[in-house]
Length: 367
Image (cartoon, rainbow, N blue to C red; front, side, top):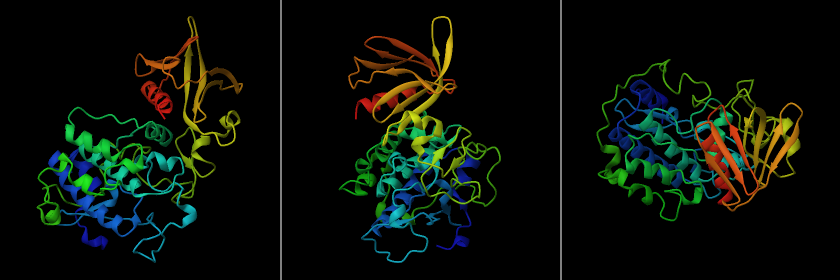
């Protein structure tokens, strides 16, 4: 597809300019994206960077997928020579855009069609809401919300839209609609697409959006927030990152280490092969005082809190998969209690991630 043929600009421009799309508009563009992804996957290719900025509109208002710089051909791909295609040694490394990356990529799992399907769900969410589903103040917090699958649906989303997004963004990539044995038939038959003529989808009349090129609105929700503006993650040289990542507290992304390390000073509290699932600086509340501690949840599983200045473990919360022995009570967006058989510990997270802590802990218990 030639770039000059897409005189309508990016779909992202239209979402930013309009605030959010109607469900009919979102249905049209999602259907065309499903049609495109079915073709791409049928060729044995994984795009790995599906997002509104890479969805261009022709002058007639139809959708085309752009930017195949991160594409990964599978072993039986019908494309045998592909410039810039990811080599096998990069098949499990981070590529793409923070807000659209599926949880399995953060755990360095091999690329699958499910990566694109997760991003399809994120893109539909952004069409309908005007913002990505995991918006937060830094890439690290975005990653934490992705790992916890912390999706919050606006009340104006229809039940059909919520259900489709839920199915596209299943935590298990093999269970995502479109990735299972039924293929894209499972997506096309969903009630959200009622009335779509899949045999003639490219001949339908596009919505009448304000199709004109131009810079992104300076006050657009996602554009004004550099941590959430979906762009390729870059290092200090401005080059796109496709290697293992860590997120510093400033929100910048580097190639120094695995994302699991977050900050090298916390690495000393991990055993070989152990990785961080959730980490926050919180206040541990006592009767007459409070102390700042670093609360850390790992995949061991292990739940500890550390004195951030002395770098010593102040408490090891005994883990249990039984909710009667370990549970989390949320009393406000910032306040939560971790309850064990012997004691109750109260914490306050100034970034209001109490529900994320609950979901992360309970998600690990249910594995």
